[in-house]
Image 1 (cartoon, rainbow, N blue to C red):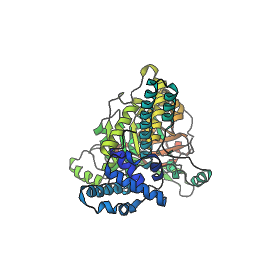
Image 2: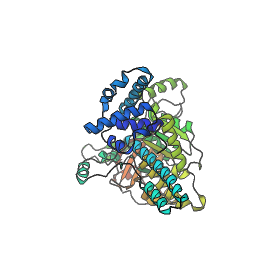
Image 3: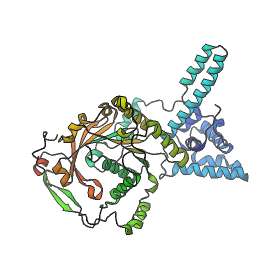
Image 4: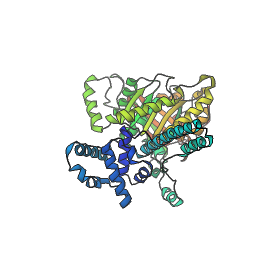
Length: 477
């Protein structure tokens, strides 16, 4: 291979070779020392490989001992090597930066495949020019088969048994703060596509805001909020409003529903409306330093990037190029991507439904390949906008997006529910968890809160939220 590793990929692969029990043998079998473009890196990797060959484990903290002769020799080479070792150790140990091992392995595999294809094409061209068609076919065939060592052999049945005890052993799932969903591991998860369906103006962006807040504050994930509808400042304003429970104006009175249950039976006995006292306003300029300080105290400032693209301009390749830029230039590898929302990406209008279905497949593939949770939303169709309970069949345009998504939630609220700050989430589809049940939410959009409290649907609920005369549909499930 004529081209070598460089930049962030070189750093990340070196981290795996030195510190990772799982990935060091893969790197050893896949990456020749000569592919590292710097002499410092070649020295480090050579010693790491030798240690691995001898002791069957990566050197980890012993790498400095293995390089002692070069480090103590002094000079520019030794000083640079010390700085590189310090950076590699920081990448591996700094939990705030969140080293994404699976993404690095996938990126390395892409590099190896790319280089193998380049070599195969050159060799095939030479064979064709020499009239050796069989040789050309063999060169291309070898290049197409080229992979890494391979990066995972799969799991055995005994390993599968060990995974049965906890779904989160193999699913890195977002904690939503909605206990009925969290207990069943129905939050967005890495390598999965999470789809939220709602009527027009029905809370899609607020749901994505809620997921983002939970991701950076609770899961300590890093991620990107990509907006194709709202501006960067508006999304940022909503995010701050949600994080710190801020009202939109000084003169607004903030109220929210309060669920009251029987202590013994846990049956719902009332839904009260209470006022939230002392809610600060996002318009108070004097509070700006206070919230800037809070952002620092929560250590969330470097965890989120908000990026807008014009409606109808972003493709999957464009999204991937943006993520590559974040990695190579800014050393930012996301654990989640909130896409507000997928249906607003660039699509061929002449074959809209077919292209839309392929788009969702490509987005899920991107999430799997890069090891992040992809969270997006879609609008319901006309029938869904007036339905008392929004179901998966009410999704707009191509229904195949339901089959592609790993988890599908729908959002429903009658006019009376909306006025009282109530809504319902229906788990329409769950690939790896229970579905077809409803959760009732208490909300306060006035203070940026999508979910203040929740409970599993009870028939008693409709006693306190009677059906309106102009509403259709049967009782909730």
